[in-house]
Image (cartoon, rainbow, N blue to C red; front, side, top):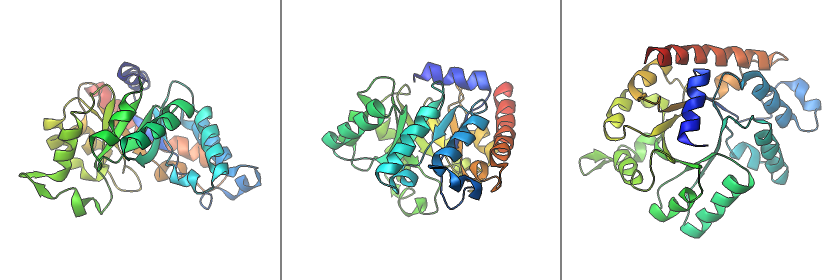
Length: 269
C-alpha cells in the first residue's frame, strides 16, 4: 500500500484507527471454543464488525507463534479475511543482520502479503534496509514505546538528546516518509509535539490507547500532521469489550466511539 492509498483510506473513513488482533484463547467468549479454530472465528467476527470504521489491523505474532504451525495457518487465514483495502501490519518486531532481514522481508511481505512490519532498530542500517527494498511496503521502526520499561534505555541522554531521538533521526536517513514509520507510544502524548519538530512528515504507529491509558484527544492534538500522520492502535479495549456472545457488537461500539473522536479531529484540521 502506498502513502497516497493510506491517506485516501483515512480521508474516506474519517478514521486513523488500527485494531490489534492479539487474540488470547483464554479471553475469548467460551461459546467459540466449539469451533475447529476458535481464534480464527473470533478474529473473523471482529473484522466483520469493525472493518468499515478502521483503516488497519495489527496481529501481534506472539499470539500465533505460540501454537506452532497451526498458529501460522490461523494468522494467514486471518490476514486473508481482512479486506484488501485495509492496511495490514505484522507486529513482529524483527531486526537481525542483513541476510536474515532479507528472508524476513520475503516471508512477511511476499508470502504473507502484509503491508508493514514492526522492526527493532538496535542492529542498525543493515538490519533495516532489506525490508525497504520491496516496493510499496512499510517498515515501522520502534522509536519510543509505551511500556513502563521504555524509560530504562530510551530516555538516556546521548549528545544532549534522549536516545530515542537519536534513533529516530538516524533511521530517517534509511528510508523516506513513503516507506518508513515510527512506533510512538500513546502514553507519551506530551512528547509528540517535540518529536514532530524533528520528524514532521512520517506516519507514527501509536499503541497504548484504551487499556494502557493513552489519551486519544491529546496525542491527536500533539501528533497529527497535514496528512494526519497517525495510525492509532487499540486492542484489549476493543476485542475484549465483552466476553459474551455480543462480543463483536460491543467491539464495534468501542470502535465507533474512537472513530467519532477521530472524525472530529480530522474534520477540524
